[in-house]
Image 1 (cartoon, each protein chain N blue to C red):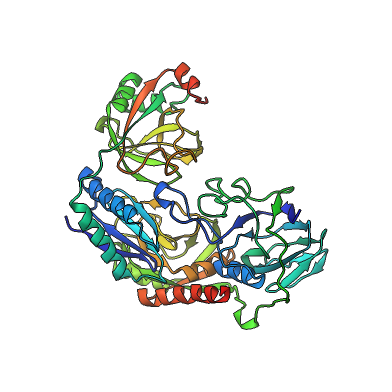
Image 2: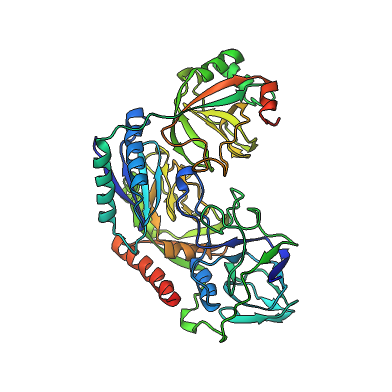
Length: 227
Length: 309
């Protein structure tokens, strides 16, 4: 697979592994990310993976662009021989009640499906963490069943409640804290996505697999969920 | 007890250092002083290391009461600071006595002012930095802007033996029209030659649409050939152009990932200047080579490192 290196800024280099959301491309990104993290290169301040690209922000007192690209390329070559560690599978409990699934009914109408069918389709998938961004611990998961694919709200909400389990296009995600946002909300999880007690602070990491599990209102409340 | 009590937090004051590093991959923003130059000078004057946390005052309106003797310096935007009602100068050290009140009016030049105190502020260290991320509610005082009654403890009350003043030639100006240098890259190819010509030959106005995340500029529209790209990591200074065609320069509290085409990135030292631009100010973009951009960045940090030695 061909890679393209580009200048992002005077202290950042970005490498493109492709231009589409694709599990194979994502795996390339993850390998490079894992290899670079393991290398722990002094002066590499940030190593940020996304769907098909990875950016390194570096110390300009120590490196120039070409040297940084060489180090990244070497790490990728070394990583090519390795297989990715088995993805961790994390189960996220979701209460799909109508009082927390703010867009369930509307989506059902739009898609000509019952609310139960929507929940069933959402729970069925095993999703990959493609990227983390937007907010601390906000993981972009893909891809949801084509029948659920939906555009963002025309007018984003000013405050999406913490723990909201949501979808947009063919992606799904959990809002780690209350924040503005336009993804359509199907339910709510009591699980914290971002917490100082987690290794690496975030529940999910790029490459992890996620399953949603439907729980009752009682279980949701027992697990510390807030309505 | 050493330090300040916040009498009035003003529009938006917060504790900042040079920013947070190494957590972008889990979505934590960089944060940090919007103008590292004024921030750096403030610390330099009181004998602190470059990356010592300071108070960042945005726009003005804040006041603080000293709870102990302390040595401070105020640098950056001119908010006509006073001590017990008497005007005091920027860009030099001041010795405060217990009970002294320093107050700030609204900025008539620049946007951000910094108060450094000898020894530095003693706020909690959060994820590798003292910086407040207002968006994420992290760092500083409970992750929020300062408010009346907040106590800002300082490390000791170490004072430089001499009073220090920044030489006039080093004092930056905050004019209403600035030129910022930009390194092309990213999705440069998504902007055809005509768009690029428009971009580099236009004067953009900052109408005040912006915050610590980034500044949106108004002016000649530049339309990328694609409306969106696959979400990718975003660096400091990145100039993204959404479909409305007006550039947004992403600054310290930017999101870590985004999906708009970018024409390039404003170099860090010019982002500091841009941060100080008042609403109504004008911006011109000028392309520079990567080598030149890196030279400027190295010169900046070499200067401050050399002062620490």
